[in-house]
Image 1 (cartoon, rainbow, N blue to C red):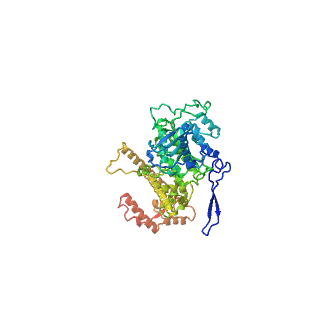
Image 2: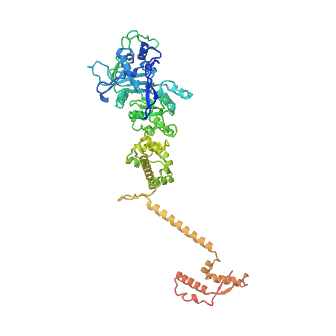
Image 3: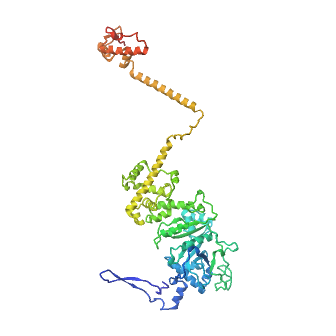
Length: 623
């Protein structure tokens, strides 16, 4: 720490011998300077100038802590802050001390950005000021903001067409434009929150959220004072500094400096279309910004070399921003983000679709709870929404049989593991209106999209494995019931609907005529079919078939064989006739045929008793 003089502490753990209980560690501290002599004022001056020993200046909260709603945000005049005034110097040391205590990496370059970067602005959250106490107020949180955007569309398109690396500065506009290949976003103006540093003893008490809320209201114009005409603070003009730009300004002490702290109504804000933030994503930080209404637009696929975290960019559209939606975007806003997010909705939807696909590769090791927070699927649905929703077909009939067997505890969960990815993907898209718990949604996402095991996700959630498996099974059963109900509705649509009790049947004009025409056409088809069957039967029998001979001439099969034997394979006599005796079978057949013909003709007396007395009659067959 410092300029290498050893003013700070570098601790080394040296293992030494110990008793039977274990090892004993000794701490070695470097105290003797190696660059300056002990007590050299040069090191003390350098450390004070660059705020290198800011860790020693962390302010102590000596007064009673106020409620966050009672705290106010103030704009810090950087000219006065870096004027090297005694009070301003103490205030600066306390601000940097909060930076050091709340961030992993701080360098003198950060101090330079605070001092003279044109686009950077500083805000502090203070407790209610007691005017009776002559002391600096306690700093509860520090906010650093960088104004970005307003890049010409021609410059943005030129950079995208050339494929060149994004220039330095304007982090969010260039990154979003490159990721979505859209040059319109770079033309919007925005404010990126570089950091919110809260007091280390007050983490989780709501002061950081209060600072973010007041900052959003400030840029939305909630504190605008109509009596203030200038858009910015009046620059200091006294002393030798004078007016002018950086090329003509003379560096000299100024005699007329504005107040160190300026209330928000006294300074009109810059016009911005969005507020944004870029940070190393963790579940805690993501939930903090998500609760504030920020929406994710980008997550870097490779982790940072310093922290091992993936960089995340989130934005929140301003309520009064006059921004037109991109071409082809729908009019729906992002769930829970309000109507102002309509122009940002296409970017968020596209990012979430890409993030869903990358969960199986680049973000497979990310915590499943964090991935669920990024995708933010809806987990609670009403019965009306579930009944009216159109569920897409994502499984086959064979898959439905397996889901049914699993839901009835007739199969192991491994039988349906291949169905979890499509079901989880459809659920995160909002296609499955099924209410599930937070643990069930996390299990579906981790197993289905990140290809983790149930045990791995249960370990991340600190939930017993058996309980997680039971919750996972219940979620799949809910999906099966929804799909089964959809299939039942599809079949129901094909069935005729019965009229309601007491309702009259609808009167259709010309219905009787249409019915008569249908009946006549059906009768004609039936008659044609009957004639065709009869013709086919006649053709099958033939003139010399046994059935035809018996029906027409009363000749049975035995008589036919007698004729064949008499012919003995020869020809008929010259008379053309051959006679054989009628057998008993022929008599019986002839009697039956006579009775049948008698009933057909209706003459019961004409042929009574004559059919069976033809013993001397001869049957003839001619050829």
